Length: 424
Ligand code: HEC
Ligand code: HEC
Ligand code: HEC
Ligand code: HEC
Ligand code: HEC
Ligand code: HEC
Ligand code: HEC
Ligand code: HEC
Ligand code: HEC
Image (cartoon, rainbow, N blue to C red; front, side):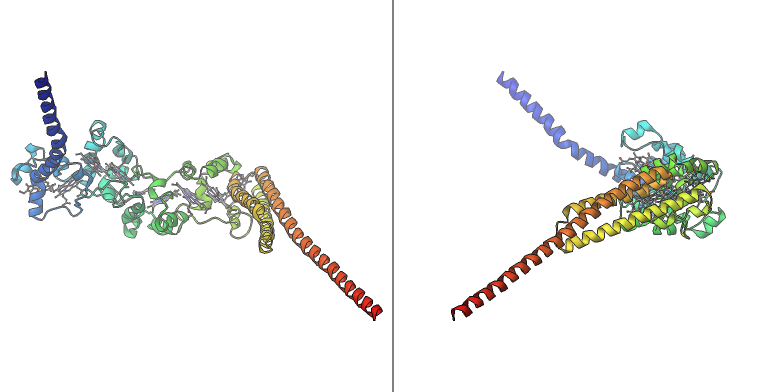
């Protein structure tokens, strides 16, 4: 019985040692072996024919794929004629037109990709053929982006890695290799300044300068693989993925329907696409910087509502400034400023919200919001005035008390003097 137990224990221990400790080593060996056996790379290194974009950190290398996984052939042979022979499945370097299918051999294969990284989507190739790039490649255009234009072919790094050509911060530069090329873009009648404009926009500054990864890069508006400019109907949706309230308000507005009928481009019509600047109140109204007067003129409803909104927002801002001045005075006089501060913060929120709400272009809705904001501003103003009044009441009270006291002291002085006189 004890002997059997001993054998069992020894057996388990052996199994444990074999698997528990040998497993990682086996993995290591496999990696080293494939690299050692990869005669493709060693010969190509020797003859100095390693592709220019080759990078040790390539994801495919890290996943133990070899040159032959993409190009076919036999990586175990050091004889060029054998290794790169058709009979061993060697396909050589794909032509530009063949590249999508070349990558798609694996990337469109769900079952294959699932054995590596189930989270990686498998729709890149089908998406790609819906894009302007894909359509033109099929027609034989040699200038459009294929998979390796955006990803490279031999230095592909995981998308979330900051070294990747398609890491969010690097995308504008990657697209700009072609879209900033004046000669090339002229052939297609396309502007070559998207990056230049984008870099000056709120989005470009947020992403490229402040590294705010919430701001859109080119692909957030155009798609990664399906790269297209958003169409007339979809611009608002593209912007709306991040600016949801603006989109909701605008799509319910009387203008949205008219925009669609007239093929106007939603948000882009007033904000532009690449050079989106920080908006200001002058964009509304009827002054020279107004967007509204590009389409509306004196006498129509849009014009009068634009004027009304501008005046109302200006009133609100003036009211806020006056209340804020009182608040500063209360602070300076050392009176209780805490509650007024909170109410003013609330008022500020209302001003911000009404700038979003103007996208309803509905005077009744905007008037409601502005009235609520004005109510809060008035409350802050009243509170401020009360503290200021209180300050003066206290000061006057103190002055009166001092005066009474002084009169009393003087009276007392004369009384004493009078008494002394009488005594003598
Ligand atoms: C013993 C050396 C040697 C080995 C082993 C070798 N190659 Fe090559 N390879 C070359 C040379 C030399 C060239 C360029 C001359 C030519 O075009 O034939 C070349 C060219 C290529 C090209 C470009 C061909 C084209 O269509 O333009 C590819 C791709 C390639 N090799 C991949 C591989 C792969 C994959 C393997 C392993 C399965 C491999 N090579 C193994 C020497 C080698
Ligand atoms: C992820 C797939 C993939 C892997 C892995 C891969 N290649 Fe390529 N290779 C391509 C594609 C796509 C092209 C053609 C497009 C290009 O050159 O950008 C190409 C082109 C080439 C060319 C001809 C053009 C050039 O850049 O010189 C050579 C040579 C080559 N590969 C060698 C290799 C060698 C050697 C390895 C292993 C270290 C390797 N490739 C691994 C996809 C791959
Ligand atoms: C116009 C540039 C462009 C082209 C062309 C392109 N890609 Fe991409 N690709 C991107 C960008 C940008 C991302 C990053 C998306 C993100 O941030 O999630 C990406 C991501 C990927 C990913 C990772 C997706 C995931 O789910 O994690 C794969 C795989 C990929 N691309 C393969 C391909 C293949 C295969 C092709 C050719 C059919 C191709 N790409 C063509 C720009 C491009
Ligand atoms: C032999 C199959 C195969 C081919 C061919 C292939 N890939 Fe991959 N690719 C993979 C596998 C497997 C992974 C996942 C690696 C891992 O485990 O991280 C991957 C990962 C990627 C990623 C990284 C996704 C991420 O962010 O994690 C990109 C981008 C990519 N491939 C692009 C390409 C492009 C572009 C081509 C063509 C030039 C190509 N691949 C050809 C198998 C392949
Ligand atoms: C290898 C060069 C190259 C790269 C890299 C490239 N593009 Fe392009 N792209 C082109 C060319 C050339 C066209 C013109 C196709 C046409 O209109 O016939 C084009 C067209 C487009 C269009 C359609 C424009 C139209 O005609 O309405 C969009 C949108 C676009 N690209 C976005 C992008 C984005 C976004 C990226 C980066 C993620 C990118 N491209 C990367 C070359 C490139
Ligand atoms: C905030 C969203 C957004 C961002 C970010 C953006 N675009 Fe655009 N882009 C648009 C819209 C909307 C259009 C549609 C223009 C039209 O049809 O009126 C457009 C049009 C284009 C076109 C077609 C040419 C034209 O002007 O009609 C190209 C090419 C293009 N963008 C490339 C880029 C590149 C490259 C980047 C990154 C540097 C980029 N875009 C960033 C929204 C964006
Ligand atoms: C991926 C998300 C995203 C998309 C898509 C997007 N934006 Fe933005 N947008 C932002 C972020 C984040 C900011 C704030 C940037 C900053 O910190 O100043 C911003 C700022 C703005 C501002 C300035 C707001 C202010 O008060 O300063 C305007 C206007 C704007 N976006 C309009 C648009 C339009 C129009 C589109 C579509 C063509 C669009 N955005 C698409 C995320 C996005
Ligand atoms: C690109 C052109 C364009 C711009 C810019 C524009 N509008 Fe309009 N707007 C229209 C069209 C078209 C209609 C549909 C009715 C019409 O023809 O007047 C409309 C309708 C309206 C209406 C509804 C009028 C009614 O009869 O009920 C209001 C309100 C309005 N616009 C306000 C504005 C304001 C405020 C601005 C500036 C922020 C502005 N619009 C900028 C084109 C524009
Ligand atoms: C008819 C012109 C017009 C259209 C269309 C329009 N906007 Fe605006 N937008 C304005 C004006 C005017 C302001 C400035 C308001 C202010 O500061 O008083 C503004 C301000 C903004 C702001 C900053 C204020 C805020 O809400 O935070 C954002 C963001 C914005 N717009 C996004 C959008 C988006 C997204 C769309 C499309 C769904 C859109 N806009 C459509 C005229 C327009």
